[in-house]
Image 1: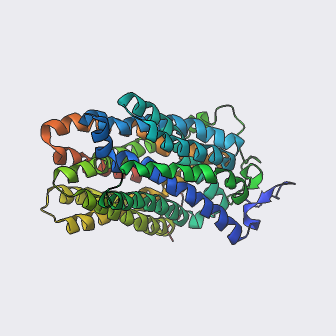
Image 2: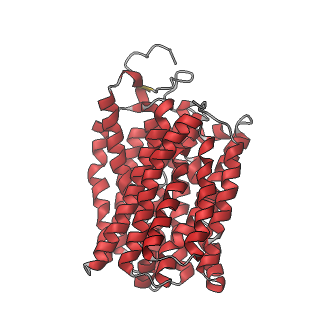
Image 3: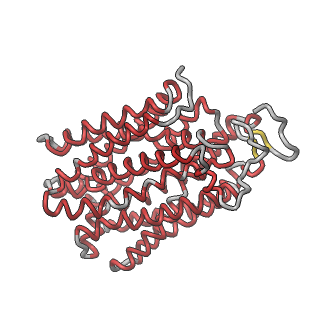
Amino acid sequence: MNEPTPAGWINARDLSLARRGTALGFLLLGYFFYAWSWNTTDVLRPYIKASLGLTLTQSGSVYTLQSIGAVVGAVIMSQVADKIGRRNALVISMFGYGAGLLAALAVHDYAGLVLQRIGLGFFMGSMFPIAVGIYSGLFAREVRGRVAGVVLGTYNLGVSALGFVSAAVFRAGMDWQVMFYAGAVPITLALFALLAIPDDRRLVPMDGLTGGQAVATSKLPVAELFKPAVRRQTLLLALMSGLNFFAYQAFTGWASTFLRERGVPDGAIGDVLGWQFVGSALGALCWGWFSDRFGRRAAALGFAISAVLIPTYLFAPLSAGQLQAVGFLYGAAISCSAIWGPWMSELYPPHLRATAASIFNWGRLISMTAPLITAPLAEHLGLAPVMSLGAAAFIVAGLVWRTLPETVLRR
């Protein structure tokens, strides 16, 4: 960590807080619209279903299709990012997912939906590992959890905004597809990343260099995650992530459909979902601080809380206002996974920051089966019993989390 800075390079420790803050601010803009784009598959699912005349299983498969693209994009683009620089890869990803969201306006049947969601997922799947790769190099380990909390908080604000805007759109009697035009923003912003974010190909990160490497030099960086010393760790991280995504999709993915079937008005549905993601935004900040102080593994407590709140939401006779309150608490609890990005990057060498963080999206290999499993079951058992599977998956994910290595000493 105390190695001299190579000639022509920049040391992250020499960058002013304002410079690093500017880079983070730009990253948050890209993350906000990434969140908006990703969650159109959940928030707008019942309306996509109705407009295209889809079955419940077909509408559930939208998430699976998007996840297929995200897994492929995470694996490919994270390695590209670790080789060509995370900043350069960010430009590609922002342009790609913006164009992918705008393409939804041209979808008129299920076949078109398949192509659009896979393509959109490819570029969105790379946003998480690229973002982690950028901010992990710019900020010290002691505050990285809080930075991750701000990033996930921004993600959840993006989803919350989508929920609130959808409610306003329906109240105003506007065409709900107007929300797809948000894709034009990241396209417009993409090239400004070259000005706002330092070139990480010649940046000494806060944790220093390993073997003088700022970027990966191997042909297949992902293979380094399966070396004997870390293979078990990598597989457990992927399993934990998969259980998290499965739980999220089994419950949150069907939330708008569940509320609509329960008779909650369309405008109120947007408010219920919006408050859930406001909770997630605030919870991310709290869990980030919590993990910086008590360790990354301590945040697994959030999954235990989530498992208690899910059956309350589904089976208790709650009013719309009470659903908003429980949803707010649930959103705050599940955002404990905010700290996974820096934690995963800390478990591997710095030149693998983006590739290591991509493990987060590998979990979608498991979660993409959620709609295909839950949709047929829901047709026979009803949505509420099937959505309860989310509680069980959160419990198992928390137990796996507790078995993995710690990277931050309790203070």
